[in-house]
Length: 239
Image 1 (cartoon, helix red, strand yellow):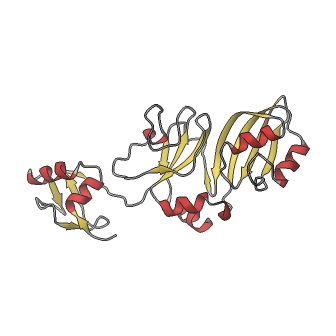
Image 2 (image 1 turned 45 degrees about the vertical axis):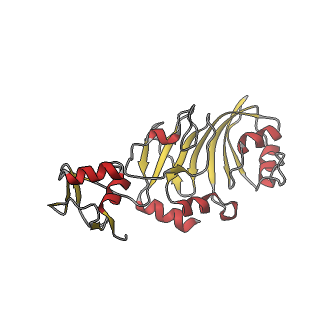
C-alpha cells in the first residue's frame, strides 16, 4: 500500500474529520511507531507503521469484505431517510464507502456481501460471469415437475428477455412447498416474478449462498463477519 499523509490516514480510519485530526495531533494524542507525532503531513505506510491514538491502535483498510445475515425489515442501501439499511448493522468506522453487492428485497433475508471493492462487485453482479446465487423459498402452492422444467428453460417474467436457466429443487411438496432455487442473475424481484409466472406465490425467501460464500447456521440474523482470505480469493477467481 502506498504511503499517505498522517492526517489523511487518521481521518480515513474514522478518527475524525481532517480538522479534528489536526487538533488531536497538536495535543500529542498520536504516536507513530512509538514516537509522538504532531505533523499532519508526516507520511505513514498503513500496512507497516503502527499508529496509536490515545494508546489505541488505529486500523486502516483500503478494501474490506463482510458477510451479513440480512434480516427482514431493512433495505439494501447505503442510506435511507425513512428505513433502516443493511449498513446500520455494521460497526466498522475505519472502513469507508461500504455498500451492499446487489440487493435483497426488504422482506427477504439471508446472505449479503458488503464491501468497498467496486471492481469485484461489478464482476460478481454481471450476468456474463454466471455467479450462482441460491435461495431457500417457501411457496404457496404445490411445486410440480412442470415448474422445474420451466425454470430450467428460462421464464418470461415480462422483461425483454426470458430469465437465464435456473435450477429449481423441491425439498418438500405441500400446500406450502419448500424449495431451493439457483439463479445467475439479479433482476428486480426475480424469484417472486418467476413463481408468479407459473401461478404460485413466494411467502418466504432467504438467500443461502452466493458463489463460494455460504451462510452458516451459526451466523444469526443481523450479525456479520469478515470474509476469510480464502473466500476473497475464491470470489476473485470465480468471476
